[in-house]
Image (cartoon, rainbow, N blue to C red; front, top):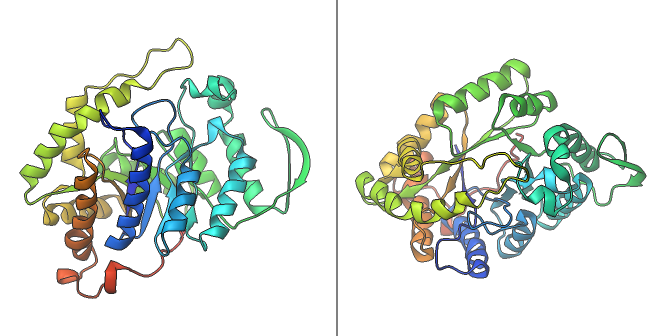
Length: 348
């Protein structure tokens, strides 16, 4: 079982964005000290839901502050950037981190970002496969050229290159099929439970029989002395972030903005994810692995909304939950300082 943290750089009311970003880096450092296998950062634009507009930049800072923990983007939005430019950034992080970096990409949404960055709604709606294939070519080939609907340029040399196979955020049958056709691992999100995750894995395996990859599942993670207390804390704190955060999604065209009952959503998250006592959290993670076959989970740890308490959450997971997942009673068998062996590649 592999366990990481998932950082969205959540801006709770009253917090300054620059401080949130600095705290996000500190969370990655704390996760390494606590013995987590990896840390992942999300990209968002123009909203308080997450104030990190460049997950690769934040991971570059984190790479300089850490030595062992795996680092990844969950995800870099491919619809608003040039695939070759993203491949260059990923290759740099691979080399400068000593091979600790994993690139995660996603299609994103029909948001105003497409207008601001000039990539347009058409590329979002029709161009994800072309963008992904160009990204893969730029990561693997010595030279790359393009003659497609959205990208056309003469052959250039790829410098630097890196042997990276990205994972793909999958939220629909189409994205599952796309990842399966290319043999890329999936990242499955917070908003679905074990049944939906298991169905996505089954669909992937049906379309890519015999392909061995390590999929990743995102979950909310919050530990307290009791499950009742952990649930109560998140139900009190998360709506303060999710209410204005989710309202920040602005469509680029006239389509209605998606709406969600924030209270009901938080109730769902606390029921289907590892939110509770250390024993409950470990049981929840292992149950998900058993039901879905996914043995790599990344935990959104920022739900409490206060940095000191978030650091405490990370440290308690490291001290009280990770040993239960690894069969290490009272942390026995962990190297000094909570460090573990270097992480295996996501694509396995």
